[in-house]
Length: 192
Image (cartoon, rainbow, N blue to C red; front, side):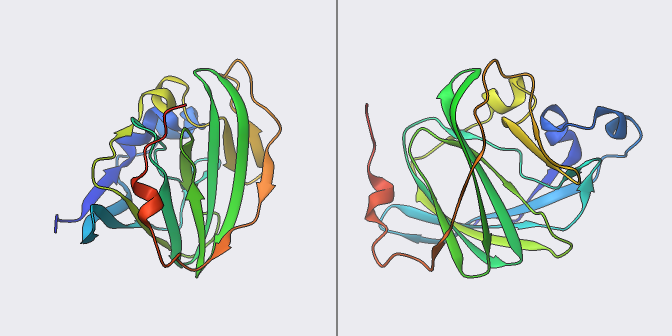
């Protein structure tokens, strides 16, 4: 098992909305990841802890990424509340965008070809677990280039990221309950 990884504010600078706040803020830890807590049949289980805080106008979030290959990912909320923001498109033109709010015991499957970011919208710390194929690699390039996902979640609500050429209306979906008995579907690679 690997040690706890810390994601610092300076690693998220490119994906945050509030650039004025960033200028006045010192580098500090934003969230923590423990990879490989469990391994089973080629799948890896990680835990991410996102302490409650604001990043300027925005609620605290993970950096956001796409998968370099077309794997799916399974998330479950272990403590607190999360918003999973998912998006699918071609480069700067997003075709689909979904927000799924989940609380303890609820889960979300990130489909193939979707980028995603996890937001802690509450005043309590968020702890999530995720299962993913051990061969899956994360790609942060689009989120860095576009200065975040296609929407930011702020105290004033959702704000479109104007760096994208096309951003559709955000659709709200419901989470699932618990963990599926069989997670083998996470190992399937899609080639469309």
